[in-house]
Image (cartoon, rainbow, N blue to C red; front, side, top):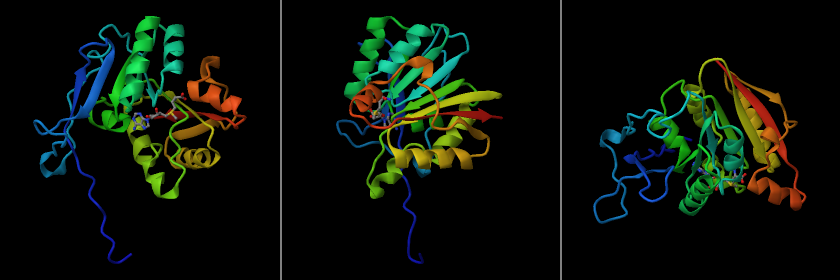
Length: 235
Ligand SMILES: C[S@@+](CC[C@H](N)C(=O)[O-])C[C@H]1O[C@@H](n2cnc3c(N)ncnc32)[C@H](O)[C@@H]1O
């Protein structure tokens, strides 16, 4: 359209800090102008990149790092981490209540996982070093069903670009699941169109390690369909 102007997305400072009470919980959140809730914008609207290494969150990691996108109450995360002590897995959740809930669950289960409270897209973009992650898990992301909210969906090409950048070379898994048919179709199309991604188990993947997530258990009770796929990223 002729007069349409593209709105600039404002860039803000975000800082990464360890929670002072709950071990294994990290906050990646906006820096605020003192005494206010107003986030501080960066000069020239440039992204604020942070010098981050996985040793900060996982001092004893053996090099195998996985990320769960949108962990909710952390049911999958805790169970998966308990079965795989050799993997350092970071859950993520931008809702503060759920982030604390999940982090406390990890502590109770004494598993070597951690929780990030914050927006995983910006964490990937601004912190995570290239070629440092082994796998991604993304289960039952918010579908944002109204059309005007579709822009809020996380599974977009720019998100996959960050995923591809941070994944290690070779064949790497992206585990995907949703109950939402339309979002599922769009997500599979987005994977199909993404150079280097191949959907291998198209709507036929089993729950990872047989573990059903909190939302999945609820949706199964409600009789909703479940769509799970396995996607391979390769470079
Ligand atoms: C529907 S829940 C599913 C939770 C869990 N995966 C499950 O299956 O039980 C999706 C979660 O993703 C979180 N989320 C959405 N966008 C996010 C983002 N950009 N960064 C971190 N968490 C996000 C939401 O707060 C919500 O708790």
